[in-house]
Length: 484
Ligand code: NAI
Ligand code: MG
Image 1: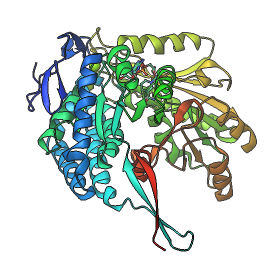
Image 2: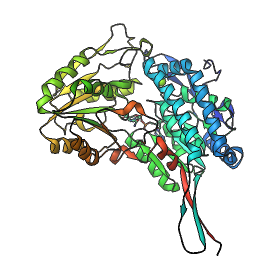
Image 3: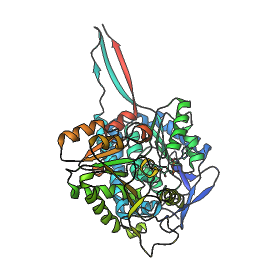
Image 4: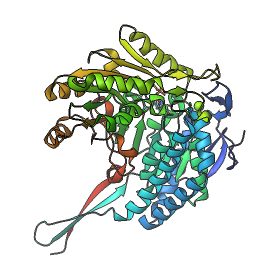
């Protein structure tokens, strides 16, 4: 099945500006999680394909792409962003079929991908160095330089958004990239490679090699020709990638998900909070690194929040991506099994509400009804571990100190929010929460491509999005000139 309207063969990889089968010629089926059918076959790239992709990236970096000015790179990115928006219907459909993402959410991801291109296109020619006062007779300044060849391992939950924030910032700063999308969902990564080519990105500046993590992924992250690795995915794989990066002594950015809390105080505007409390948990069927899976509620408003969240859960419907309901299927039967495993461990808990899988949802789809639990102990596995499904737990607290202890009481630290009208409390908690992002009386702020993002603890390290990503994808050179 060629990917329309771009006419890409998904059994091909993009290396050095050319689409071709991988060396082994092996393929694997890509599954549509809405019904379990095979969408198409994709290439199973391996170590020799990665070798060729890294060599092509190096040639681009040493050649036309490496010589392009910031303005020229920005223009190419602008053009990629424009092509992405021109193809919004097709890209959204591909993502919906591949990931199982409801169509409206998939469309939002296309817009976000375009926004990353626009933001980095406009930002990169404002990436200044510094002059540093030094000894008499010296002029000292700094240069921000690309790392060289960057490796990007992308998960299946937000392919377009994560390509945007990671590959977008890497290309903007003049790196040449090798992208290994997830084997569960990689069609928009292939489409992005083709759109970038059509926008005039020089051959080899972006290479896309699909394949499994164990083969193509491991070959990329352990490759001695790669100068920086960006990874989003599981903690376990993140550890392997950091080890591979350690061997080659290259920087690595890890974004490994979380157990992000929302703290709801007695003085909060509950009705303003409610849509955020629920949506941040069930968006993309809960398969979101920054999903808010823990809702911490002060006792004075506990019953009200529990009741109102339960009401919203009761109205949630899960069904095929193309039906565009609030919740789609999970990405795979494997992910469904992981989530059902957690639900089994929550059998002792008070499940207060459940959404419904619509009756005509195909039986081969990976559906899980959204589930809401209350009165959950902060140390229960459902309150500690990343579930990556449409499951939220509500935890009561008495005062600010207890709320903070619970909020900071997991191994993760990605996103947190505080719902309260007390400005001093907002400021105290914004400082005290161990979290890469803190939102005050909102959650997620619309995903904001401008907002630096990343975690602490098991959520990982390094920052993507916003200007910070431009620092992350460059290294700093200090030039000290003696002129007397
Ligand atoms: P994963 O971390 O194994 O996969 C993510 C990406 O890493 C994929 O492209 C995969 O091919 C690649 N990969 C796997 N093993 C690799 C290796 N040894 N070397 C290099 N690359 C490798 O995650 P998976 O198995 O798809 O999902 C399992 C759990 O991970 C989920 O239930 C969820 O908790 C978490 N996860 C978190 C994400 C996030 O956004 N932070 C995204 C995806 C998964
Ligand atoms: Mg898929």
